[in-house]
Image (cartoon, rainbow, N blue to C red; front, side, top):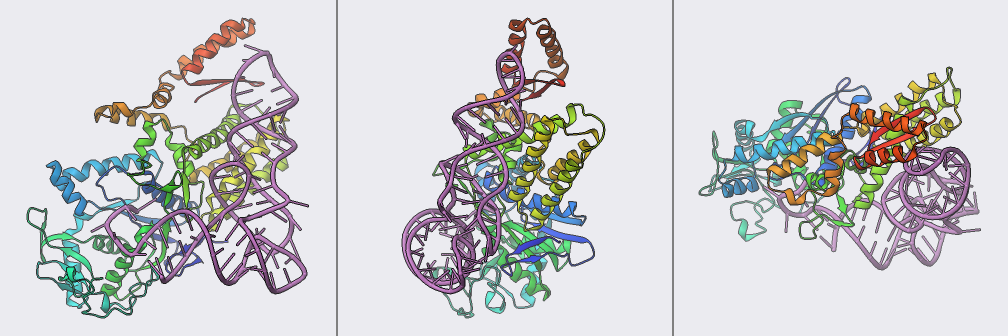
Length: 494
RNA sequence: GGCGCGGUACCCAAGUGGUAAGGGAGAGGUCUGCAAAACCUUUAUACGUCGGUUCGAUUCCGACCCGCGCCUCCA
């Protein structure tokens, strides 16, 4: 079987094949760096990361580009208000975005910044004007003439056929021939930041950067273009219009859109008080890995209801997986192999693969790994796991984690970093006890922990349980869980 | 109004034209000095409501109710 993906353009699930050889060329709409990224942003970026990782795991070469929108109206307004240059202002949020993405184990694509391509955008607009797809308004802005592009609306399934060139739908839009015409280039208003270019002063419209940078890096027709569902219209529709008007060729073969999430059952909004940046969640003591796991628990095309209950569930899920891995790597096994286990591991790998091939059904991939874990744990309990089975089970877990990227125990330094950031930016009041506790569990060094455990074990052997219990309580308070198994002692950080 | 998505157990959530994955939580149990982990049993005669098609529908069709998204640079 091959990968099947839902394509917004055809409105169907289609078999995915790259245009050329074995190389996939993919463009993903990245962040507008005007603020800290919120959990909704990251749902989309995690979904794209799952796609990225699965393409790579499937053996494709991948050229994956993501834009950083570092100029837009909000940026210009906010930077002016803070008395910063556009560059200074956006640099701060770009850095924050990349840190947050790294905290969620989102792999970094090739980055393309809008402000590094202003001249190319101006030339692109000029070309469109020469082809009569664009026109210049009195103030020096340029607009795209949608009436000249018959395919307009094909992505978002909107019918604009009734709109004729010259029909002025809205009197306020006197600059445009048609109210639906969108800005390619915006002339500066007094006091606004602008670039000096071959088509005059101004700044790019929202959509032009993606056309210019994607085609520059990936060619005039490429395989995949991804983003949040809100981008279908107008952003991606407009990208298609600009790009195809320019080249006369199909722009993108597969359009991939991630659905919005809800927070506690409602659309996330600042006024509802359910608006959370990633940093907000970490400050509350939640682990990035649990957040990522929750974000992948529902397939990308389904609405995901992000709740704190769900986040706790995701954290429990993850602990179960990690405990399983710990068990595999810390216990001793008798030699030999167990065919049933080997088969279980193999089948699980296949189930994960076919689940993901089915339009990235991450929920089913989760189900597959949990079923394996349960069955293997049961076999563990009756000593039916043999030495030769262990690498097979580990391989299945690791294959799962190549995609989901949640097993590595690397939350604490990331949480520590958010803690430091909060202190440095005057947000001490937002630091929760839970975060302090979590970070605290990273304080004790491994050797210090092991020394305490040795003392505890000595006390237990001597049946001085009051002493051992005291040490256990001490370690528990420091966030260290000590487990006594048949094979000996094992510990982990909570 | 136009276009689209969804309503599955206490919670989250897959899925199929032939009788409901997985996880969490609860209860009981096994193991255990304590603790933790793990496992077992248990919790949907039923998949929003009402019709229709069918030998048979949660799965297809229609209507209705409810929730949600896009249609204004919000991922």
